[in-house]
Image (cartoon, rainbow, N blue to C red; front, side):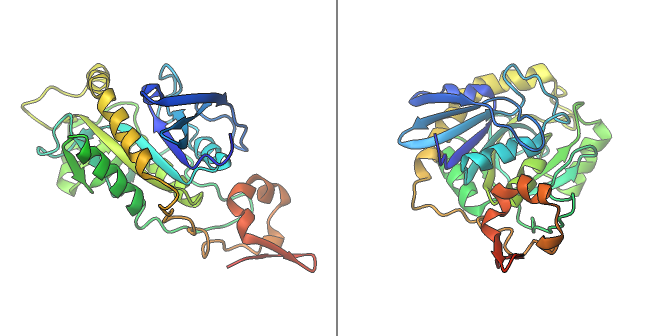
Length: 297
């Protein structure tokens, strides 16, 4: 299957939705190693779609262990232009109740150990992530969730903690004082790398708990998070299916030129192996004249 325009990353239950015709499972080699699992390629309501289990089938990979670069690069090689992320988050506000959906428009990084760029190895690029979420895709997701009867919060800041432990009470209270809205462990690196790959990215964040700041609620547990997710998997499937149906050929990728003014290094000085590794990202910007390379602006 070629030119898969829509990707979905989340739990493995997402690709068990009604109406999905699975064509193949494909393992993709990348310069950064293996993605989390094989990509499930299929067709849903006339749209070609690629699904990836973020933590691998059976939830085997810690957030810190995720190979974010391989995952996003794999979607890029498949031709994905729109990437829907589905993930569990904790609420940092009383009005964001477990069972609600948030479509955040900002991220705050509290991670420590994770590669979050494709660049380096002789090539410098500075990509803007001032607005890290695709406005087009975020609107499609929020509208789809609303149409499926969910309580939806449009916008908000997702603080990305390292994990795998949940927050201390001091951290949770501090994030609330800073004005953060939700907390999770995975979306920040996906958003940054998707922008470098010129993929429109947005998150369908499923609220599962109140972290540990809420005095009247039990503290978050892994078992509790998974139980809420299991109860809401059917809702997530319906929302994702509706959103995919809205992403027809007439919907333009509003992140398709993120690299246009971001590539800094003279391409003639970039190691050949770096250019080769990044060809899916850079190919449209490289031009050769009289044996010399230049960036196409």
